[in-house]
Amino acid sequence: MSEYPYQHPGGCECGAVQFLYHCQQPLAEITARVCKCLYCQPRAASYLSDTMSALHVQVKDLRYLYAHRFGTNTADFMYCAVCNMQVFVRSEVEGRVYALVSARALKEFAQLQNFATMDFDGESLPERLSRRSQGWIPELQMHCDAAG
Image (cartoon, rainbow, N blue to C red; front, side, top):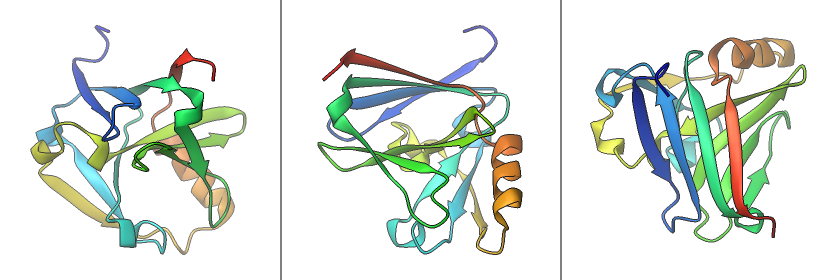
């Protein structure tokens, strides 16, 4: 992918769900967002996204991936069903799917140097969906080795 000079691999601990995050920067220059909502804070969750990026996910079997929703029920927090690790987040806004990378799922997580704490609890639903469509990864491709 020549349009994305950097490819950052990641996935769950057991390897059932893997991904490549294609973007414009090395990890040391990317700022991960640390979410302080009631769901993410206890999990120490942090995320990466850029409007000039893509996320390509490879799943060994569809049964190895499950979605969890909470709060506004507008985002799917995608987990490996084998090792229970959060790998990415997806949200559909006006018929288009957007994504976030779970920073802890990056193989080179230690290279991240910049973290910004975010709190979106006061957003209205339209504000939240608008933010996602303007700041999340606009290309999510998923491939499965087996249909399950």
